[in-house]
Image (tube, rainbow, N blue to C red):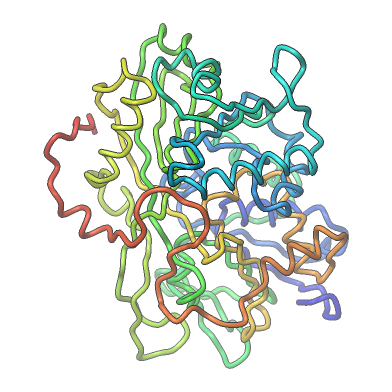
Length: 449
């Protein structure tokens, strides 16, 4: 459905993550869709425990080197509380860390120009505080007791949010509108005709039809539409420890610390639980599946493997070691604290880190919303409006025109099937989950789960 086409009488949204729920919320509030039947299909009972958006925390920041996302975050920013984000690099700019330094320079410029934030120390009314030396970083992160970086800046208007609580709040907002029907069932496949999706087939054989199908299935999307060379699922490591009340009191008011050099970050604790994680290139889980669009063909794509598949699954040794070393460096007195649990969070990565919000070029009634690339959650309060603008062919403003261009279906696919993003990340590019899982676990401080 574009601006010149009729409003669909029925809309089926598959997936209730950030893109799916926010789209449902925006559609349900628009007069143009007041006569449309809107159904939201959920794979598991909400909230799905293995969904990328269901977790203890997510970073909330307008700190982008890309001005369009900084501007979009200016719309979402007022919806979140401020707790602080300390962005650092681990080496000086002349020490082989030019990419991290350039990112920080551009991000700092964008929060000054796009958001109008004031430079200076917090106690003097400043909102963004440059940190030029290790001593500056140490002053801001003094309660952690370790080494958190060589330079960077702290944005006191950024911070973090309880990810699951935010999703549950959005779900309640959608429910209150009394316009969306929720249904729990797993999709087996989309049944494609020559130019449209004929039906959505559920596990068990039931078939659903709709004038418009919105695919918002996150890292599971490559199972339902051919995204080879466009977007791929990658697994990111998260690890958690329990702490004492004294440690909670000491660390709870600390800003989030994110190292642009290696992608490692620590979220301040809540309810005596602290999280260590990495925004990295991640692991690919290559899986042989039937081609989602063509019968009789098989393809290989990366798909999530989670604790829903294997309840005893923990992160690979490589990721465990990276989290342990960063914890030991940043908060030395917690260095040997066992993980209470670990998990792999699954992104859908694109080559550039830009999202894919677009009609499919072949199937006229299929609208795809995926490719969050690990940075979509913070836009939860506002992204649905931008998605529906694109859905209706309304760019709305200059930012809308820029986002439409960024998020459009690519004119060409990459020559390789699995996409490793070229966006900024930490860790090593090209790791495969099975290979990393097969490596030894010597020296790992075991999880209790």
